[in-house]
Length: 340
Ligand SMILES: [Zn+2]
Ligand SMILES: [Zn+2]
Image 1 (cartoon, rainbow, N blue to C red):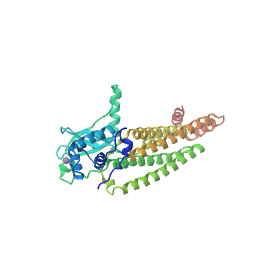
Image 2: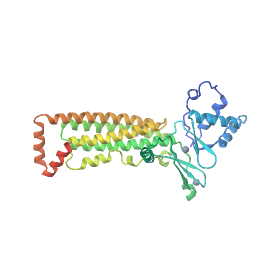
Image 3: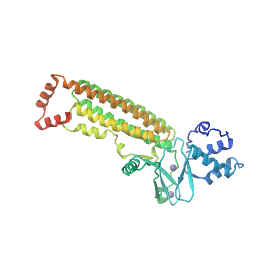
Image 4: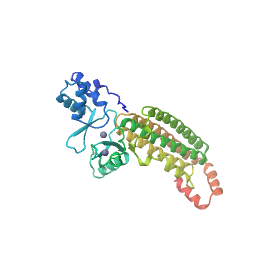
C-alpha cells in the first residue's frame, strides 16, 4: 500500500537566490513518494521513467541539494555506495539490514538512545549523530515467507507514540483511581478524582486519534514495532500504582508518588517530542508533555497546600490520634518518616 508522505513547501526550503526549477520539483516529488532507501542510480531510473530528458547529473545535483536542504538523509549500509531516504516528517531511526536480500528495516529505541547519551556524557563527548546498523538475515529470507511491505515510518512512529501515550494514560487513570480510595484529606480526594477524570478524557481523545490513524492504513495494527521503549510498555505510572499499594502511604506520600510519575512522564514526552523530527508522533508527544506538566504543577501546588493545612493547630493531633487507633507502632514510624 502506497502511503505518500505529505510534500513539504519547497518554496520555503529552497535556498535564497535559487530559481524555481520544474525539473528539480519533479525529482523532489518522485523522491518523496518513495519509502525506503534509494541509491542515486535507483532514483535516476525512476526519474528517467517520468522524463527521459532529465540527466543523471541533474538528479545527482538535486540529491545533494536535498541533503543540504534537510529533505534527504544520506545513509551508508556498507555497500560501497550511499543510499538516500527522505527526512521530511520522517523521524531519525536505526536500521536492520539483511545481507541476503539487501532490504533494510527501520526502528527506533529510546533505550538505545538513552544509553548512547549516558556513554557520551560519561566520556564528556558531544554527540552529533549516532548510527546503529544491525546486519544479518531478515525474517523473510530465513523463513521463506513473503517479505514485509515497506511501510511509512511516519505512520508507524505515530502509531507507537500513541500506543505509549495510551498506555501511560491508562496507567495514570489507574493510579489516580487508586489514589481517590486511599487519601483521607477531602481536598486531596477531589484532586485525585479530577486527575482521574482528566486521564479518562485524554484516553478517549488518544483512542479516537489512534482509530483515525488506523484508517490511513488498514494493516497498520499488524505492522512490526517501530519505536521500542521498555519503560513505557506498562505505562509510566505502573510503578507508582505499585507504590500506592504499600502500607503506610499517607496523603503526602501519595502526592509525592504522583509528582514523581508526572515528572517522569513529562520529561519523557518532552525529551522525545523535541528530538523527533516534525511528524504526527512528535505532535502527540509534545502535546502530551504539556498536559503532564499541568498535572505536575497542580500536584505540587496541592502538596504544598496540604503540608500547610497539616501544620495548622488541631490537624496533627487528629491525624496522629487516627494513626494510633488504626495502626501498630511500626506503621506509625513508617508514616512519620514518609512525612519528613
Ligand atoms: Zn532478507
Ligand atoms: Zn532508514
